[in-house]
Figure 1 (spheres, rainbow, N blue to C red):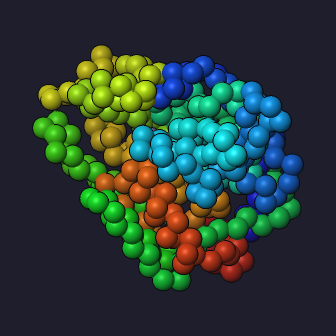
Figure 2 (figure 1 turned 90 degrees about the vertical axis):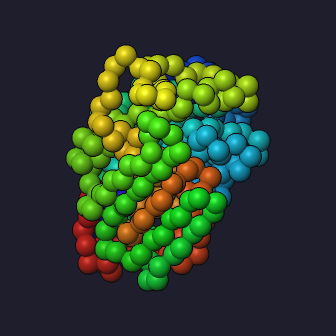
Figure 3 (figure 1 turned 180 degrees about the vertical axis):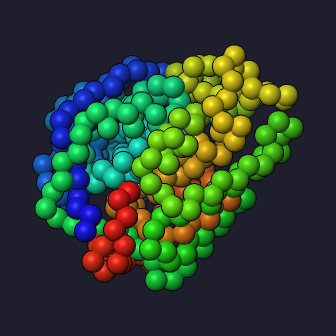
Length: 294
Ligand SMILES: [Zn+2]
């Protein structure tokens, strides 16, 4: 039976936040006990406020371009790439100390976070890992976004993106058997992206202030503006998958379900998680019969 984990030793990562442009350092540290979950600690603020990375702490005002958690006025934005790497590597419990309000964007993907967490090693607690599973389907719809989830004994995700844009119209990806190695090779390196015409508007709204050609793919009418070519021709849907995995982990525990997402985005992903949890039940491997290392 899979047991709950945390990291074995602490490792830090430094850089600049995508939206705030603020310099920050995150330190991944072993959690003290099973059931602790994933918690961010703002070590730059008085009394070092803790914010658990769960949907109920998400801040709806700012989630349009990233997932933001907030508690008692202390905030951390753009947490989805770290959350995605934690889910993929099967980290149930983790302390994430941060000395500013946004983790570094690094190369715009989850690759460096995943590699750093791998370097931390894994510590197991003698407590079974718990999962959210479904007995009945869940349907979520908001605007052009549709996300549905069906009972399954493992995590499967189908993700489709569609834009009214000459270069990027439609991409789809199916993930039938979610596991760490597939994630590291196929999803973690996919970079965040934006359209060139959005940049000025985003920066007027004080977003994307830390963005650069090194941390995001910038899409123009006929192709990408970056000199470096794409990692994958379908990198955009892979990044949306990366984000979706991170947002699903805001459920607070790993999820076993078949999820079909059409045009996902942070605000809607969190709306979906809220609906999902109304129907989900908590089980461990002994009950579900599977032993899926996530
Ligand atoms: Zn992202």
